[in-house]
Image (cartoon, rainbow, N blue to C red; front, side, top):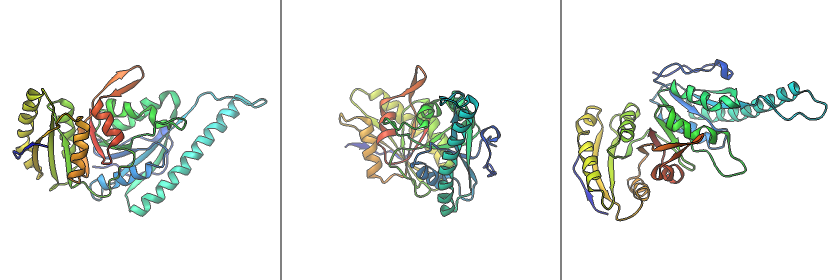
Length: 306
């Protein structure tokens, strides 16, 4: 692989509340949005290490409640609905109680709460919660049938429509400390610039950034524009006490996602910063090839912005 080498206020925890009572306080705090999966424990650990030292943050589990349920013979619709809601809330609270014990072991200053909403308002409720936070932390939901979690219904909307930077944990990824070595997947696009800008708010001073552009055949113009844009960042990054290097990686015909994943492994990166690329299709969003590949294959957390 050939390279060129020019250098270049949190919210307070609260007592447990129902969804109607839950709102985020500022645009400064970290908010974890959970999916009621075993992977949630890793999401909370990542949030605990990503939050600035001593900061308090919140974790919410959206619980969609149906407005109609099948009614067994002889049982009233109202009672059937009430029993269904009670069961869903009970399952959610049991999951949250396990997570609270995990948080206690981490000595994290976090509130872990349930956020009830109607099923038809699930996506809008998640987006409303996310837009009140400074940064959202969540996991990639398991998409395999038959156990598709509720999170598959809001995950793509969160990344594309929330307007907030999102720290995403792919399956099997962990964040066991504050990021010190960060790989930035750079291209001359608004999404890439915004992802890096948002990252500077959360990365600790003194961390090392490695900004890379993957060069493919026939992309000389795109590489030139990316190089020019990344080089102009040097002074800005220095003002944040962040060391940065910029490299162009020759993909040699390989898919860009393979080059980025290899680079993350080689450099022992704690975090990958990248733009999130997607487009609308009916009621969901379809991610671009590199975005989709990293969401499913990376073992390093991704800080993404659309």
